[in-house]
Amino acid sequence: MTDSVASLLTGRIIKGVGGNYTVATEDGFFVCQARGLFRKEGISPIVGDFVEVSDVDFAKATGYLHKILPRKNQLIRPKAANVDQVILVCAIVPPISLEVVDGFLINCENQSVDVILCINKTDLDKNGGYQMVACTYEMAGYEVLTVSAHAAVGLDDLRHVMKSKTSILAGPSGVGKSSILNALYPQYDLAVGGLSEKIQRGKHTTRHTVLLEVENGTFVVDSPGFTSFSIEHIPKDELQFCYPEFRPYLDDCYYVDCIHVTEHDCAVKAQIGLTIDAKRYERYTKYIAGGKQ
Ligand code: GDP
Ligand code: ZN
Image (cartoon, rainbow, N blue to C red; front, side, top):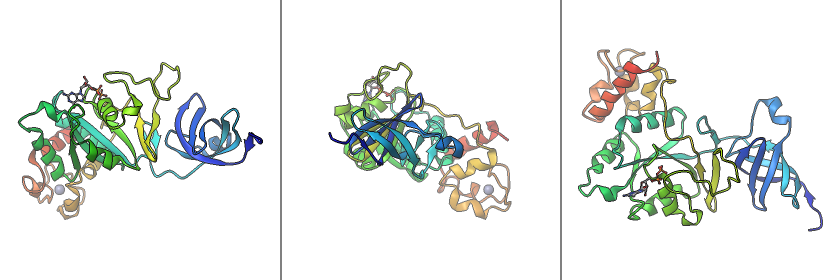
C-alpha cells in the first residue's frame, strides 16, 4: 500500500467499547475514536450509526469519527440506532405469557419501531394451539411468523422479512433467539443457551450490544439486555396509542380524554369482542390499573 492515510470513508458502527468504535466499511473494519465535535452537539455515537470516518490509516485500521449521519430512529434499550424492526420471539416452551408479549409490543409501539411476532418451537406443539396466539396478534394488526429453529420450519419466511434490514431479536431468555439466528445464519455459530461471546467481541467479559452483518446489507443487533421490558414509564393516557387495534376508534369516543376503561360512550369499548380481542383489552385495563398516573 502506497498511501496509508486517506480521506473520508463511510461505514456503520458495529460495536463501541470504552470510546473505541468499530466501523464496518467496504474497505474492512476500522477502530475509531470520536472527536470532541459530537460532545459539543450533545450527540454520542451508538451502535447502528452510519458515520463518516476521517484520518483513515489503512495500515493500522484506525480513523476518527468525523460525522454521524442523520438517524432514522434511536432505541433507548438496547442503545442502537437505525433499527428497522424488532422480531419479538416467544415460544411454546416456556409457555407464552401474553402479558409479556403485550409489554414488549407496547414498548416497541412507544419507541415507534416496527415489530413482527415470531412464535418459535412449534415442533413442541403438535396440536397447533399456538395458532390461537397467532390469531390474537394478527387481529391486533401484527405480522406473525410461526417457526421451529430445530425442525427448520418457517425459517425462509423469517429470512425474507429480515433481508436488507436491521433487525433486533427480542424476547425472554430461553425462547430460542440464538437458536433461530444460528439456524438462519449458520456461519455465525452463536452460542446457544447462554453467552454468545464468539463474534466481534474481543476478550471483554462484559457483554456489549453489537451489530452483526449476517448477509450483505442485512444486520442483526445482538444485545445482552433485551430480554425484558418495564412499561411503568408510559403514562396511562398514552398507553392507548400503543394498541394498533384501538387507533381507528380513538377519535370517536364521547370524551376527548377517554382512556377507554370506565367512561361511557366509548368507541373502543364498543369494539370489544368484535375487532378488539376481549382478553387483550382486559390486559390493557390491568396495565391501566397498575401503571403510572
Ligand atoms: P435464547 O435464550 O432466547 O437465545 O434461547 P436459546 O437459543 O439459547 O434456546 C433455549 C433452549 O431452547 C435451547 O435448549 C434450545 O435448544 C431450545 N430450542 C430453541 N429453538 C427450539 C425449537 O425450535 N424447538 C425446540 N424443541 N427447542 C428449541
Ligand atoms: Zn374510549
